[in-house]
Image (cartoon, rainbow, N blue to C red; front, side, top):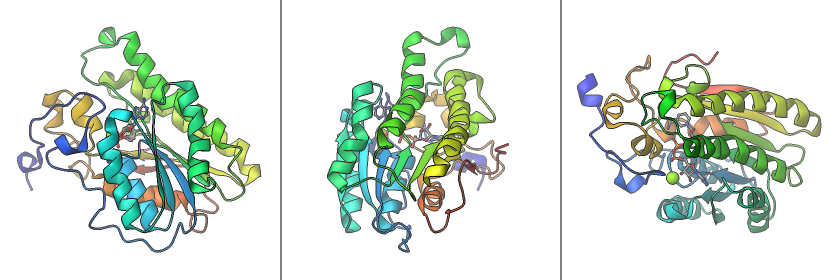
Length: 287
Ligand code: NAD
Ligand code: MG
């Protein structure tokens, strides 16, 4: 396939972005993911589980036997309903938890809401994230953008993780969504990239503190993945060639990232894996 054939059609959305407006539609594993009982009986909270990588994780977790609580922004209700539909189709329980996690009380309440709905909580996936790349220079970055990026990506991760601890126990897992931006920062994503480097640092630190309690903490660092975040925050001219600068020469699909989360969530397969960052980058280095 040539670069031209791989190019994404021109499109733009306002944040947070919606799956239904994307062309082509992302692949969340709806037709391809086969579970093998790796998460039977686990109860998971997935922030940002309505769309993109989060939706692929939700579908994979449910097909592996987990019940899932999905956190998302109220304006993403339609995407959340679609993600929930696949969980029910897999025969598992789903809880929908709308709310803006840049608000401390909302973020802190999520683990309890999830545990109430699912009868407990074993896995926390801190996947929600925000970026803004429609800018030329650090001089264009506004305080409102810095607030939104840092609160969504860092504050909320800390709030949710803290509030989840009373529910987590031996065998539980926390999985954070990092990024290739932690290693190869783009100038247009100066604030976002710094949060992803911080998430890697937090992952190692939390693994050190929570290891003695039998709780594993890891991160996944995706490369360029075709999700609503991209048409909602990248300038149109960058979108066409999105992902073509990777060794594999293309953007990844959410379905290609979800198995890394399944592995890290599984207490049989990843029982001795903690404090690590697993790259799913199309070949870009994560060191
Ligand atoms: P996405 O837009 O589908 O998912 C992000 C989700 O975050 C949204 O659906 C939304 O529900 C949630 N969110 C954002 N702000 C929120 C808020 N204030 N309150 C509640 N929820 C909020 O896009 P995605 O690409 O799947 O993003 C998921 C994660 O993957 C993010 O952490 C992102 O940084 C990371 N990531 C994405 C890429 C990529 O290329 N798409 C690459 C590396 C890392
Ligand atoms: Mg969404």
